[in-house]
Amino acid sequence: MDALSALKIAVAPQLGAQSLNPAQEAGAAKFISVPDLDTVSPGTSAQPLNPSQPTGSFENVLGNLVSEVSAQQNASADTVSGMLSGQNVSLHQAMISMEEASVSFQMMVEVRNKVLDSYQELMRMTV
Image: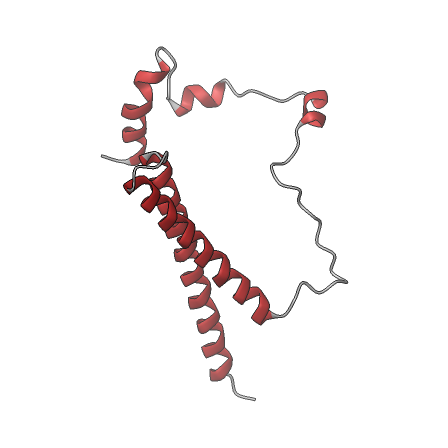
């Protein structure tokens, strides 16, 4: 069973008569009008990058990445222990927290792999 059919089975009873057919959904695209577009605000306050200001050393960037992943894993462990101890934490919250921590760890490992590959490629270059 693929992910889309699992989603149809899980969501279709809740949607009632609505269809999940992507071909039908594509034909019924909904557009946002310009006045409505002005009212949309991003979820976070994104700051534009200024190339004249350095964002920090490479060591600091990687250190921050590792500390954020560690903090997310600690928060996930706290959520799971809260659920197991009977606090007001649902299974859904615990699973979401665990998956977020897992995905962030996988991303960190992939970044590490790319950095190591780049380093090895630089070491193979002849000067």
